[in-house]
Image (cartoon, rainbow, N blue to C red; front, side, top):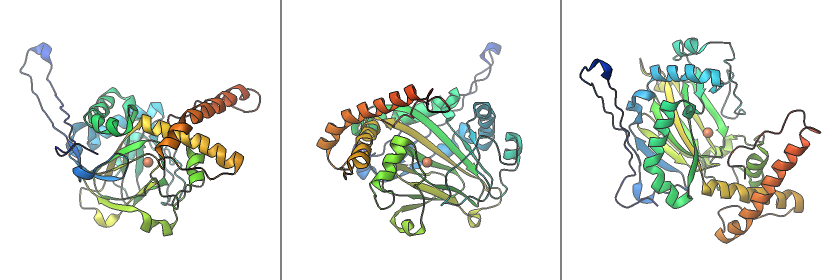
Length: 341
Ligand SMILES: [Fe+2]
């Protein structure tokens, strides 16, 4: 739980200085941005929770700056595009080129056209955004680390779209501080312990084998979700493997306010890694021995016993793939993503 002294707060200070070599007076602009749980007394990083923030006022998170960021990320293949006509039930497939071959400049010049969609992945690849991510998470680090151990691999994903648009139903390995920066969206999030929405074997396939084919939205699942109508200053925290999807609607659009921007601040922890190791051994028990193993989180003692074995199994699987890849696989085995084991 978060400390009782109130909101979890971090401050980000940005200083813009004029050229000092000219010995001209330094112009300094200072922006203070904060994020805090809506219900500080009951906030825990192990469950879904509502957030408040004012990062939508941050200079680096304005549309013109995001276009500059997209230009920096495009050569790194970190700008992602979806095909037109996807729904929340579609697979979350995206490519590093616009489906109609538009340039970044063209995408942003037409960004208010209904259905526009671009995601900026791994924004920490650009130093100024790495600094922003680090400062954001530094202030929350004591809360997270008290509950989940050490944070590692901090990444940022920014979604820019024009209603009507969707982000399809999916799960991620990371924990996520998800902030709405501009425009409005409906965010649906499901508890990561909800085995009706995502059966245990499907979570294991995703974590261990990187398969998400069976992660699909069905309308009857909607009532099981936490639904948040969010605007600038709102956010949602959700832990690793919480299913989620978003939708934006034309009825919310006001003149000059036709773009929706969201920022996912993602990170792994000792806890997410330990859980992934439990998934490793559970998948083996389920598929190899046809058992119904205890899900991670149900028993601390069982998880503690399984995790070291899961680590060994994961490492052995990866070693096997690496050794076999020149013989069996067409392309070399790639390292597993963090949070696999
Ligand atoms: Fe996601």
